[in-house]
Image (tube, rainbow, N blue to C red; front, side, top):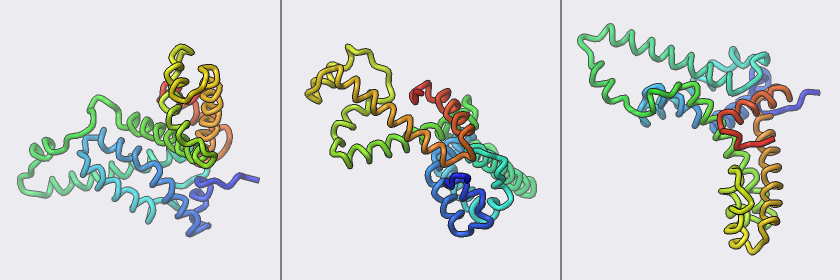
Length: 232
């Protein structure tokens, strides 16, 4: 039996109604930073990016989902990015049509006003990088919640800077002194946390794909974007 995830609920939204819509809303809230990053790298300033993101999500929730949420698409990241690219293209076409109809125009002034983002970076890569960082952050938040529940919140926060960074044994001494532990004990705890973070990231990715093979593909893509900060 297929595992029910947020994305499988989204794919079935045309049939599952409220459940599917709520699942899509949750995913949209979670990965809004990726949409904003795409828009900023596309030339929008902060306010314009927020406005266009809101317009995009309303369009996605109200009209586009039943036709576009095809199970064959597999990964929610690609579905969302493609839907965003289409939406941006349609908005641009409408804006250009209005400008052609208007007497004169302020294209030069508008271009000067639309600052923000690095024009050298591709919007698609900006989207994927923000997506990857969001996945990592959500995994870290899940791990933090679990540690706090075990009464290990302070230790987790102390170890967090080293959690996703490779550190030589000699660099662990300050952390060991701070926590009142031996360096090898700190190393062992970091190893366990990294394993737990890897599991949390996999669990997060599993909520956005159709099957285990897509989890591995997304994890490999995420590792490439983040420089190996999620190992294993």
